[in-house]
Length: 352
Image 1 (cartoon, rainbow, N blue to C red):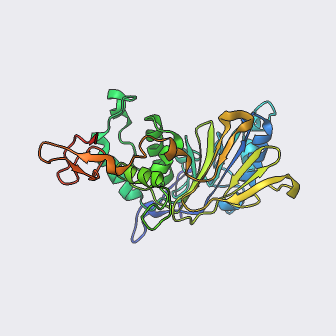
Image 2 (image 1 turned 120 degrees about the vertical axis):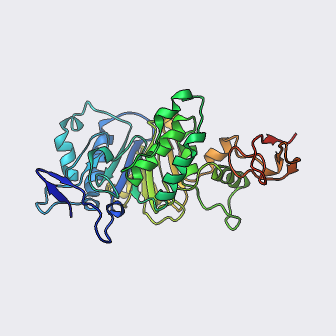
Image 3 (image 1 turned 180 degrees about the vertical axis):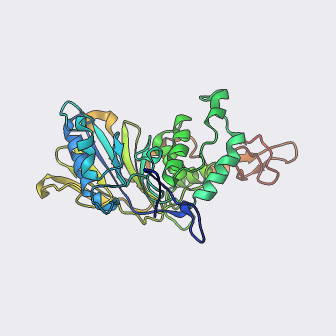
């Protein structure tokens, strides 16, 4: 229940066994993209259908006309079907886009709040981040060690990276944007934050395992259950965390549209118009690159980014070296700046 103060509703305060920060509920996400990268009003129309077909994943007041909200670039605290009516320019055929991301439920895992509106700058999130407390503490602890040529001395203006009172989704978006603006590609950063299962019991390539092992020393996993849709304006996709407990299905049509959603049937297509369809699997990524025009590619796994990354190294070529320790081949660093798994001093170098 929300407390009413004057004409404004505010989240309740902690009392007894109740903690407001534990508040959470269901939500839904979706994405629509034109494979060719061509802008059209049809993409907006498709996005409208997606969010309206996800209306049951939001909440409604007792009057059935007040909701906890929905959004793309436009957001508000209304029912899904009210979004386009409130922003009539979304109906204007002169408004065109090659992609759209939607989110149903205004601010997941918290009470509705304008500043926590989704989608955020890079992602929209269905689910919850159950490791959030640990993620937030570790992020705060590493701020004193952060350095980046792109940010320079201005990096301190970014702190705290995760502010108090943010939802788990907002915290994830902030951390992801830090990695992307710092120079990593969006898929690369997502694979750091939401790794697939990569232990010795799992069958994955040597390059990918090396990628995950290396980055585990830099960023701990943000574990769900979570389904994410994301975009940087060129790449559009979705990913599930390794638990795979949130649904995400996709359809690719013969006219070059890709529709990804929390449920099957967010847009109805006649069978002859469906080229392929499927679902995201635990730890996998669905990625559409619109930069290649008519030859745009769809990637349905995480094999693409590590192969391009110079960080996917052979661990046997790493040696530790410092004043206190003699070089020991095949030693792995305990963190990004450590040279030695024993003493932790800096100065790691590749073995010649």
